[in-house]
Length: 136
Image 1: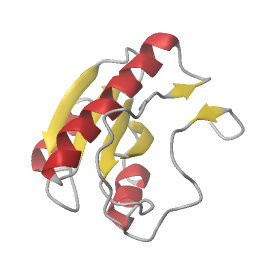
Image 2: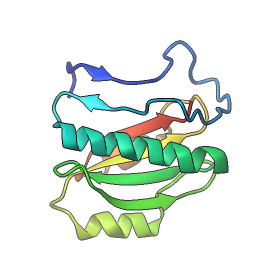
Image 3: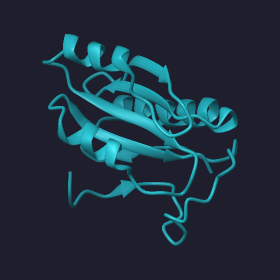
């Protein structure tokens, strides 16, 4: 997907200071990726808002797994303060090796992808997209 225009709502000037963020209910959380149709982008957008709305106030990370062919959420999980992706999640994706998913989760600070984030993306062939959503 490199080289494609993407509409991403994050303040690029201020990041990776590990500052705790506050949930902004007025934020758009809209995702528009040219390689996906409107239905799938709407699914990504809904997942982005959901993980921010639930995870932000609780100060936990949440995960919404979206099927990138249909745009439908197929798995949701609440994690803890620093991570998400329990054994239940791993068991779920193993059951569907031929499906392709977007892993959408929230970050409650302004940091970049964690090492765990990158390992999850790199070691799973059916996770085709990975999003860390700022809650602000």
